[in-house]
Length: 132
Image (cartoon, rainbow, N blue to C red; front, side):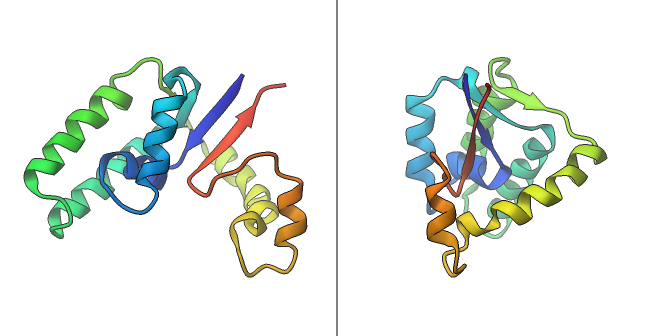
């Protein structure tokens, strides 16, 4: 099964229009929610992003209320959308991954083209994982 892991910034694009919203909406349209996951911590981060946008005027109070209704329905209360717990050991194990894969998203890195050839499918807003 292929899993789509979303970080908080990717998920926030689903509930507040910004660059990348169309791509995230297309993923939600084409991919089963049962194949989607995020960290439990990301739920709080998305809420924080939406509150910040409401407080600084990028989201109206009405748009914020609707975003929260949609967020609760699609993700928080949806048992099919997997929420992964995280502990310090998992956080610390990510350091090597970030360093190794940073080149994928850094357009100025000299080895970017060669490294991209090794990646089957990757988006700057989510990570696609395949169980083997």
